[in-house]
Length: 430
Image (cartoon, rainbow, N blue to C red; front, top):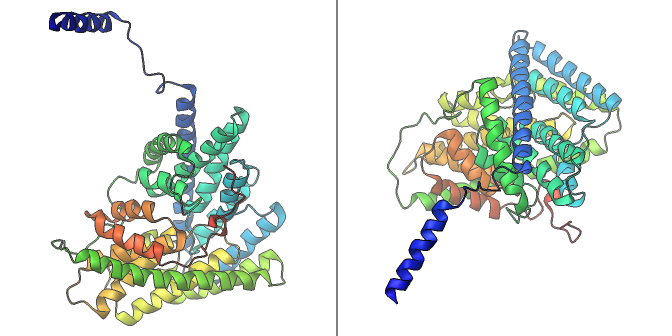
């Protein structure tokens, strides 16, 4: 009997060796190349957009001289408001999420020129809104456009739109894994992978766009906001500290959400043409940027300045309050852009405040990354992608304390999220 079994094994092995080589049918399907194509196109769009934004920022800075900032911001607000008034509202992230949940991911691309123009004007002039939201919307609609012309079914169409969103987010931050998870989490904060069919398309498109974006921009792979603070040994109590920082970050998240809703209600009842509203807010943003330059722009470079600077407790408190106001005013008054990078800036400044108030037994680097994660998770309801995003962008080696802080900020956030599309509903399209 053993001899018979042994002969069967040898025969089976011989047949396997002599059988023709079969390629894995999953890897080289039509869908795979479509996802790669989306990543290539998304990377090109994001790379050109990023280079244009940086060029505009540097060009505008040549004319910055005191009170001239007020004229620049007011004029930019009037111009972008006029474009929206004439070309129509290009929408915002909330509309994108509603399209995914209720319309199978179908999005129009005819508003993309308006979104590109208005967001670039705002970013270049110095508004407190970043490029991530425009890219999520623009490349998400690009994925929808490809799915429409290839006549994909409803689930495939939705997956292409989500993959486009992930592609845009990945390109702007250079973190493919966080970009994919963000696209999943931000749709519905209770279920990270509610539309799990989009995971592989998102990973493939994001990875491809990351390479293309890096080739175009030449930004490099090093941490964008590498912490300048000395590395300290880890301790078990770091996790308890992290939860405490998470609670502080959640409290600031409550303040941001309250102010956002208050200003949104104010501008909803503001009876004036769109361009006058954006011009007025631009003048206010210009005054704030003139008096406190570090709170101007969308904070990518300003965060580096914050981390490497010497700041008093009073100045840090003022920076946090002014940045919260300028960020919420920018988004609610009609300027186009995202608020994730400004939120991370606010979190970093908050961490430095906490450390100055009570430095005993604390590690500055740990406080900063935990507050960054907590503030962002509390406002955007994306705790998982926030962990990877903050850890990678700051070069902080231990993700576990960030995990505790991020989840604390998430669970202590207001029940009603800032992004209304994240609210649970019985009408969700499965």
